[in-house]
Length: 463
Image 1 (cartoon, rainbow, N blue to C red):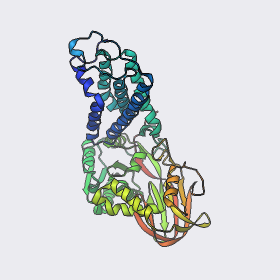
Image 2 (image 1 turned 30 degrees about the vertical axis):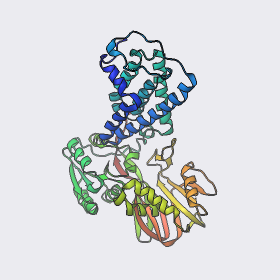
Image 3 (image 1 turned 135 degrees about the vertical axis):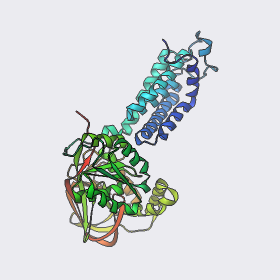
């Protein structure tokens, strides 16, 4: 069999793959592209490689212990400098190569085609060097592919949870972006993405501004736009949704913040996704959640909650600018759960009861494998309500609720799906969080759905 690369290259490529060095370098290169899909592909590739290595080295080789084949004549330039001393079957190199390439391809087929030739060459190099039998290589590669699919079973790819392309909405197609005014929150690190969209759609107008100026710039943009665009995190997108609803404009969302749940659940991950939807005039109508309490009211696209989570959000904001977002989230969780406090007392479904947490999702959240919940349908007309009852050990109760299924009931937590919710007798100073923002509420809090109220652009797959 003729190798896909010349003999001088094969041994070097094989050696570079020892201990996963080649694949760690490839993952670093993918992550350096700074695109969400490439970073997820790199992470999935390494996770698949880890599972494959564990399976082959810790289980396969220790159990089967096949001796290596006798040395066979190969060109001097193609021989390995040092013949491996480990057992032959199955090939760990082939397993690692196949696992990494398959993991990358499952998340991003485009990047998979880039990685595949190197993976195939590494696998073939083991046979051409005389260190492996063809059966060793083929079995190792099969185990690597299986490991990648096993990881996908535990943590599904985003393509497996694509939202339905309905209900379709009639919107203008913008071949060059003319008519789109996009407001970018520069504090969210979104300026680069906004400029990339302007390069893809030269007729679009992009307005970059600081966080404090976002609401005013959105109002100005809506007054002159056919399509209102926004680039930022979930809080910025929430502000844009309020303006789009009031002006009755379709919304174009480009993820650009730390948290981009709405955009990702919508199926938009980068500039290419949004640009394609705008060019082709593809859009859907989605539900909007609304909260009201006395004179306060607003909307939420993702979630709304009271109890310990809003406290966690406020604590995280206090520390995020000092130590970064994720470390601040961990610190906030530790501080909130260790604090000596009493559950929130409120009337829920006709009964006054202590609550550690009430979470309401705009649409039903589904868990697949070990991944966090995602919405399959953004227009299902339901509030996904999860309640963690008061009692001892709030951390244990919250963890149990997080691990439970969407409709699980227990003495510690419960879940229901409703179109409207009343929470009465809420104590003054109670915190309510919506899409990452926090306000104080008291008395009667009402949550409800506005079915198919917002029109948003999103790429719609044919068929």
